[in-house]
Amino acid sequence: MSKKPAPYQRQVTVSGSLLLPFGSTKKWELDRIRLQYASTSGLHFTSDVPFVHINKRAKRPLYFNDAPAIFNMPKLFRGVDGDKDERKKIILMRIKNAVSQFMEGATKYEHLFLDHYFAHFLDSYDYEVEYTDFVGDKAQAPLWMSGLLPIPQVQIYCEDPLDKRFSAAPSNNFRVDFGFWTGKELVAVEVDGYEPSGYERDLRRDRMLRRAGVDLVHILNKELEEHGRRVITKLLPGTVMNTYYSSLTNEEREGASFYLYASSSDLDDEIPF
Image (cartoon, rainbow, N blue to C red; front, top):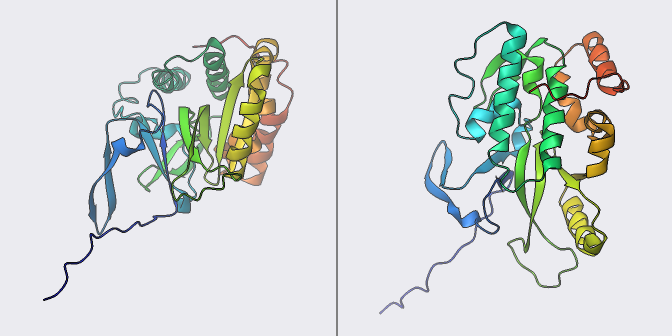
């Protein structure tokens, strides 16, 4: 008589993907993102908490154009009237408001950062460029629509390199104010006050995030107050600010590059939304 087999247990790692909960999702609620079914076309997930799925192998940035899919707002870009400039303002305002809906408990400085970020793109060029949309199809859109989409209050799971206990699952979960996926890396932006008591905790978190391949940018509240939109053009890395004109010719790119890196002291810091 054959023995009864032991209970079957197996763990499989599917590499090349990121699942990033965001918004008001509580920490350690990753189990609410559930595998619904598997087919020859891929793995299909459902979730009752907001999250972003990123295919790292595709090396495709997360654009403004992805906002309807990411925020589950399919009608976000519908019913926009007016001339080209007015439509641009309305669409950017809608995207900014969609991001804001997932910023529960955010400080006024986090909202100020968001205001300046979208105001920057309101003043950007209107070239038509080809891009790859969220489902992999080619499409045409104004250059400003290929700006990177800020993911608010994004959660990142990572390991502590000094932890002596081995675990296949990350033992640390950190929430950052905004995340930007560039197609190659995750850029995290933290809008900070002056909190010397939290220095040791922040240092440990920053070290783990950087070791996990996250480019971390700190922006101080007082810098937003004193420098306004210059914070966007001067402190955000080129991997964030340069993505939206990457499809231009060298000649066109030179003009856009001048706009991005020229002094913004002459720009009006009034929020136009």
